[in-house]
Length: 302
Picture 1 (cartoon, helix red, strand yellow):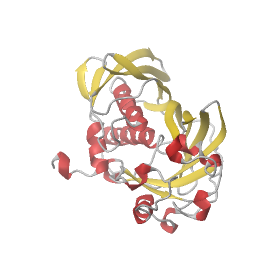
Picture 2 (cartoon, one colour; picture 1 turned 45 degrees about the vertical axis):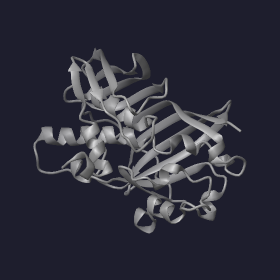
Picture 3 (cartoon, helix red, strand yellow; picture 1 turned 135 degrees about the horizontal axis):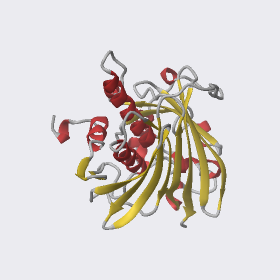
Picture 4 (cartoon, helix red, strand yellow; picture 1 turned 90 degrees about the horizontal axis):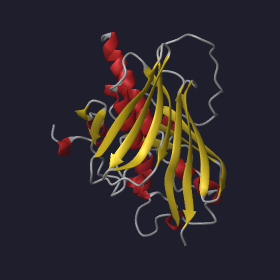
C-alpha cells in the first residue's frame, strides 16, 4: 500500500519504524495531521522505540521525559540513545530528541525482565462501557459549523490512530460542566499488530514492544487539556496556550493494545500557568495496566 492509502493507525506504525543512522542514533519522521508542531505522544513513542533498539529481552516499565522545545513537524527528528546501565534486573537508557542541532526532548527510560512478586491494584471507576458510548469523532463532526462550541478541541474532528469514546459525550451538558476528571475509552484502530497469537516467543515480544510504544503515544492524548476542565466556564479554550512540559509513565502489566482501554484522566491542581494531570489505564475487566502523570503549560493569552 502507498502512503496515501494507509489509514492513520497504519501510518503511525510506519512512523515507528525508525531508520538507523549510526550506532545508538536513529531518525524518525512525523505525522502531518497535527499541523506544524510535533505531537508529544509521537515523540514519546519514537523515543521509546529508539531505546528498545538497544536492549534485548526486557520491556519498558517506566519513563520520565521533559519536552524542552516545540518540535517542527516538517523536519525529521534524530533520537540519540545513551546506554546508561545494563543490570541483572533493570536496564536504563537516556534518549535525546534533536532537531536543528538542538535538544527538543529528553527521556530516561527503564526496562525490566519478567519477574513474579506481590500483586494488587486499585479498582477501575464505575463508568459506562465503550459499547454504550459514541465515538468522539462522530460526535464532533455532528457538532461542526459556525455554532460549534469553542471549548471543543480542533483535534476532535481529525482522524486519529485511536478511536476515542468519552464518558462525558462531547457537547453534552455534563461535558460542559466544570469538573476534575475526564474518563474515555480508547482503542487502537489497527489491532492486528498487537493481537496475541500462536507465534514464537520473539513474535509475542515484538507485539508487546509495539503495544508499549503505542501506549506511550496514547498517554499524551488530551492530557494537558484535562488541567483546564475545572475552569471551562471561566476561559475559552481558544484563549489558552497549552503544551506538555514533563511526562512520566509506569507500566504495571502487559499492555493489551488490541482491546478497549479506559484512559481515566484527572487533574489535581493548577497554578503559575501550570496544571498537573494524572491518568490510569484499565482493561475492560477492571485490571490496572499503566499510570501516567504530566505537568503542562496552561497559560491564559487574552
